Image 1 (cartoon, rainbow, N blue to C red):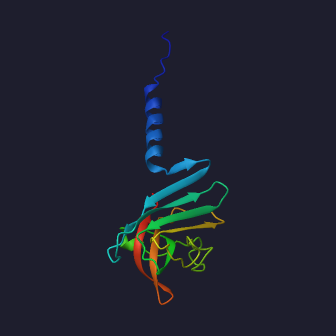
Image 2: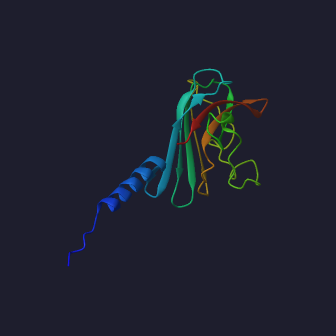
Image 3: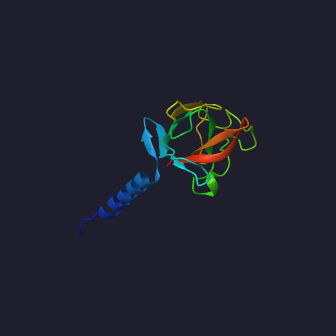
Length: 163
């Protein structure tokens, strides 16, 4: 009777494929948190040369923190930022992300870094953040900066994809 031969190659191949899939498709994991980030770019209808970055940390404890650092804003103007439902190149990021789609269009149901209007420093720089008491789902795709005109958010001027 011949000894039974176990082939390891199919198992190793499957493990490698799973590892590659995970590395390529999942965001960075840090201490039970999912971290996504992206760089701001000016929208076609925006003016100036806006830069900086956004970062979202979806924590294992069930909270989400979004931080933004924006450069190239006009000192003396007011801005507001929101997490949006689509990528920057998809319909100018679509509408606002809402934890409960039928809920209120304001924090904490929406994520607004700065929690409202903010003004940049004299050098055109703004640093804002917001923390909400839930793990933002996969529909939280990007962060958009709006110029405030007449007290209300107007044109989408910059966007960062959270990928």
